[in-house]
Image (cartoon, rainbow, N blue to C red; front, side, top):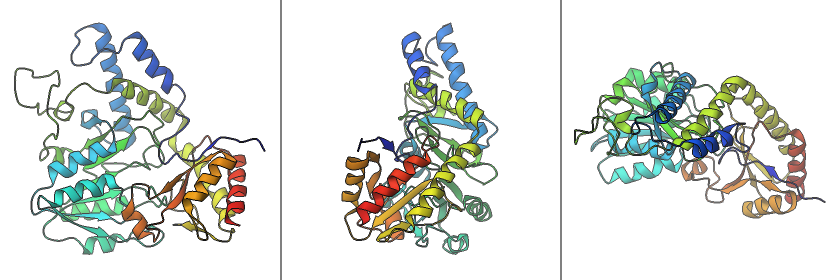
Amino acid sequence: MMKQTIYFDNGSTSWPKAPGVAGAMAELLENGAFNINRGNYAGAYEVEGMVLDTREQLARLFGVQDSRNVIFTPGITYSLNYFIKDVLKDGDHVLVTGLEHNAVMRPLEQMRGQGVSYDIVPVDTEGNLDPDVLEGMVKPETRAVIATHASNVCGTIVPVGEIGEICRKKNLYFAVDTAQSAGTIPVDMEKYGIDFLAFTGHKGLLGPQGIGGFLVSEKLNKNMQPLIAGGTGSQSDSFHMPENLPDKYESGTMNLPGIIGLHAALDYLEKTGIEDIHKKKMILTEHFLNQVKEIPNVRIVGRKDTENRVAVVSLDFLDGDNAVAAFELEQEYGIMTRVGLHCAPAAHKSLRTFPQGTVRFAFGAENTKEEIETCVKGIKRIAQ
């Protein structure tokens, strides 16, 4: 049997990347990776224009009117730290969902030492969250709600629209982690009442690693200060950080190759349409779920249908070791997955898969039904 290579780890990072990403990055590096906001010459201004175009693409994607509210960072983890470590103060209380990634939980744990408290809003074993339960957990000292838009463990979508309405009513800040939803399902920042939207470029947006950012509402920006300070190329006569956006939050030299790569990926997404991409991924997900749910000794973690989910599926091999199952899938079938706790122990505790974790399959639009069939054969053999 000839070993194939089948990539089912798009929840970690997308592959292949969108057409044109590598070429755009190489062209920048080979023909003029000039520093914007520093170089006063035509080449630097041209790159600056491409960065502005990328901000405008992201503003359109996430439903904000002013692209200056788009801030670039190395990724979602950095972005969430900006929010958690600046906005939250001694005595503040935060609500988070039972599906959160350690990009939320670890900085929150650090902030407990500075007087910040939090409660976890429970979800059921399919990852479903009841907004009424969340609303009932709001305290007088609650200042913010932080929610992942879609679980990186089971793929369940969190009702951010309903949570946003609660936050408006209760005058709470609302921060959303779109790691598994951006570029896959629509998220409208203004419609959903989101004050802080964190995104990464290398997953559903099909761009390179090392580039991400956040979008900030005007209300939150007035009460938020930059976590990192330094040179911006603007107002260089002052020791103080500029108040204007995006300079306020963008100190130091930017990851221009990453931004230009993301620009190419967003071009592709706009031309192709995220709805069509999501539809392809969910057809594959349905094909996978329909077959796997018939296999004895294998448990689908979370929803067993394609309603209210993204193309992320976790399996628990009940009569074996999940790590061994993942190893055998790779060694015998060339299938690349991710096994373990997926940097989300809170989610695994909610889903009753802690501490053993799961084997996670995350499908991309470039995968095929034939690859799904090969994977199902492998799972059947391993389960037996």
